Image (cartoon, rainbow, N blue to C red; front, top):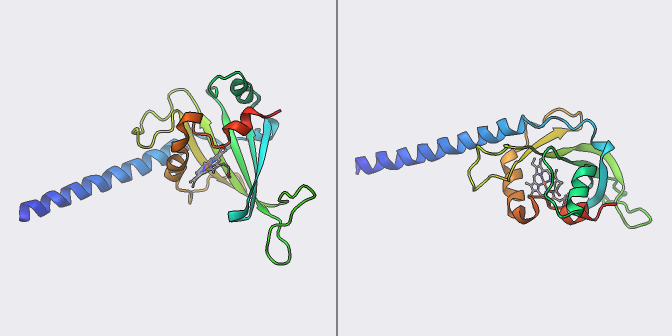
Length: 177
Ligand code: HEC
């Protein structure tokens, strides 16, 4: 009985250690991603109104990545995708206001979610979490790293999109002008 309990404890602590190690690996991975200073010089390929969280979002890619998708090639190494989050402008009742096209209007900047792909990145992750060669990072409105972001969630939520290079807005990027 005692031996069994010891073994159970050992398994639990090994699992806990593995989870800690993974969290640390994910955090360290995020440190590779620098704030994308020149994101706005890229391609604004779509905007998204998020009613659930009352946000207006702008999604930026690079001309090279857009060209690659149009040509049926994978997103090239070195690509940085930037999602800029703004609060949606609210009306007196607290609901997002709409412009003439029925779209949200941007208000205060909230922060940035960034993904970057480079040769060899992601090799330290297991298959259950790895997103190809992408790494993720979250930045606050002042461009500093958002330490409160759980980067592991970035990987797990984007993971099911493996057939389109882990990118939700793949079709919009491909269709960009
Ligand atoms: C619960 C699911 C979920 C989590 C967690 C998540 N994302 Fe996303 N991400 C999305 C969705 C959905 C989109 C498409 C845009 C939208 O609907 O806002 C998206 C879009 C993006 C994009 C634009 C490229 C694309 O895939 O369309 C980037 C960059 C991005 N996310 C980075 C991050 C980062 C960095 C984190 C972690 C800090 C993160 N995401 C966490 C669901 C998620």
